[in-house]
Length: 308
Image (cartoon, rainbow, N blue to C red):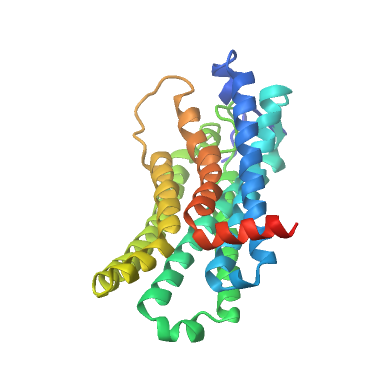
């Protein structure tokens, strides 16, 4: 039965950072710098991989795809967030909000899938080195990346459709800095709790499935490395996985804070600051970790600078 006060909102207003009026200028500068570093770092990784023939292998192809997904993810959220901090343009249309939610989930899931693919790539390279060239062909690598993007797009569409099919009759003020699921569901007339539970289980299942697959890959990798007779061989094998492991820890560590945080009452704005860690901090760290921990990538970067 249709409720009399049910309406389709023409737009929403973000109020997440209104809890920190004196910090908005500082937050703008901080987030802008982190955003620039994220973009520059990921673009440089893609640029170096593209220009250096010795990096034209599946591992770096996946890394390039991961960098591109990071760029897309940050562009779906951060520019709008920054404009709200400095210009006060905190409104977003109904369709714009749905699009932002879709793309943020799409690129977030894609990122998780690509990390899983990279874990599988390291498993094949270390545990099945004689079959690596036949398993990780150029076609297979392209198909894995395409599947990651398609899977991310499909899951993002399912989550967004589940949320925005709800009737909205409450306030149009979103208690967040982007169109995140929990604050949007608070505006629904009915069904918000059910959809929230389903979406939460859905997201946790997808993330946990990827994480368990990565753990399984590294369990086999660790067992293989421990069997190596040479300490140098063990160190070399582990070094090829170090940067990926670090990014996985950061990615899933921050994601667990978002999806598994206790739902008890918190001080106003605390949830917003917690969610910033996943939205801004994780993409900021990824290119730094890969740039500093990957020796081949660092060498290729310096060679590219010398040539230019």
